[in-house]
Image (cartoon, rainbow, N blue to C red; front, side, top):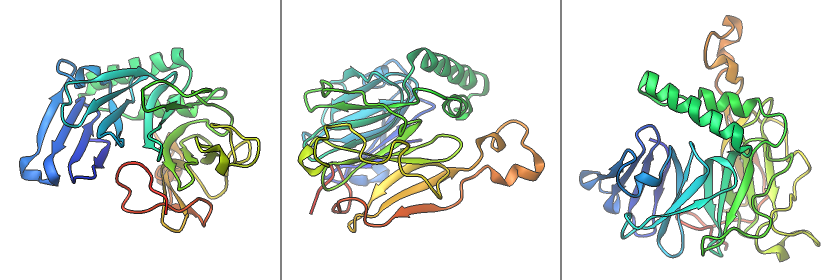
Length: 293
């Protein structure tokens, strides 16, 4: 299982990446939970490819991105069979968040489609051989990226991409997750060797950004914010405007294969990093789109 959200009415939606599953718990009641679909035969799972994360917008529509492909899907929470599919212009969707205007921000961990195809093929081979999902093909491909890295797709509420999307740059070597603050500015964590980077981009309300900036422009330095970080996954913003990121891995090469014995404890990341008061505060609980004070 991978992505999980709670909607404003208390329903819980969960994704299973290795079995291509969509699971639903009405009002969060685990005794009434059910698998909506599984595999690649029934909608909306027929349009999924390693579903990774999901979000709900202001129109009660569920958005899902795909780790093994270059698309996101959307369906009404009331009828998951009515699925729509949108190309992202990137590969291996990971994070997803929705701003106060209903725009959907998606992190694509790999921007080069030819490399993305090879990664997907390797992942599918690994799943077929072992019967379970392995991070290794994707992680090794991400860590090996020397140019291009990943990118960020911005969908407007009607499903079309915003001008300039997908966004890329040196501060986005391996974008994993995305958080939206109270000014609708976006914060991107990066899973990229040899250290983690936190990117800060101008959002759709450009009046809150430094003068002259447009949507998607980096507010952070060219390499993002660095220091004290390892290979990052999630990023979140709290009611004080603090930005929290998690050090997921330290040295990915010590996690798989034959690690060096003396370095084998360096696999897992160490700790959580907080940037105090850097973002515009948001209301909690963070259910659905970001809510400013």
